[in-house]
Length: 131
Image (tube, rainbow, N blue to C red; front, side):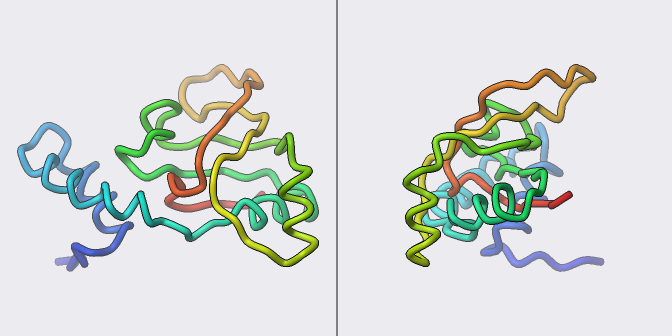
């Protein structure tokens, strides 16, 4: 049987999904809230580097219960970040910042893959896959 670290973002996210409709889901949600507020795993400059500098398409997975999760679902695919002047300056200065990013991409739900504007905070990111 797999053991879960109840202080781990990944474990709590997995347990929240698994507890769908059960009373324990609220408990996991409460434990996720402060972890989202302090999450600094992925900076805006890291996203810029992967997408703009390295030319990668990004699949971004959101933390369950985060604002981005509520708005976009479990994940989005980012084709290109936009409004990146400040992020580019910080990247060149080797500064890492967290906060809002704006991108063009699509939702990973349903079969329609229409480009939309996606705005989210880096603190809402659980994980990223590169293509």
